[in-house]
Length: 291
Picture 1 (spheres, one colour):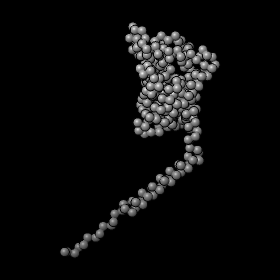
Picture 2 (cartoon, helix red, strand yellow):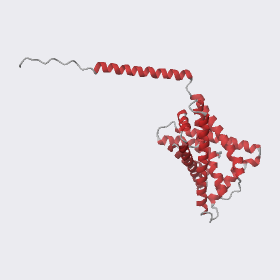
Picture 3 (cartoon, helix red, strand yellow):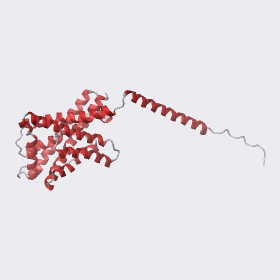
């Protein structure tokens, strides 16, 4: 986690923009896939089963998802592997890139579902409109609505970031897929709030006719959900795991001393081997007596 966070903090802005754009689009694709699957099967849980496809693509390709970075960057910062400026630069850049990718795919999907506006929205488009309206309805409930939205965002990214971290525990492709799949399926099945998913589904619903304003989108969902995702990923996954698993100062020094002693021992064994087997026997004098 520390190494991954430090690498992300040091990544060039160009790479963050490209990888973030792709992540936003891929997560939008997996969201529309989940909606389609749920409609076709009449089983909402079926949508949750297929939604992690996009997340797995992001993990395997090493792309940039701001909600995943909410867990990794604070860990690198806490371990003094990067500076606060690098963390802010990464999160801001990736957030904007995720937003651009999500909007791009949302616009393409709106064109696809309506034949470029020449047809009335179909069942899938109507469902996306309904989702956009539901996600911006919290604000009409006052404080209870905002608290509920924030809590759902915390719970969401707790699970999402567990998927990021658990994928690191395996060196095989199949292992990474399974490890990432389970927590993400869990969050989607619960209907929690994910900032990057909402970057796609709310504006896509607006393009398809949802009566949602920019203020409804940002003040009534996007900003509070992003803050909740930051708490869920940064605290409950990133920092909690860091605080319990990071080597203590004495332990780290002891491990380093043990590694140094092991290296010296290997070097000494290597020297002995050279001395015992590497020297050539002195040549025997050739006999001058004729046979």
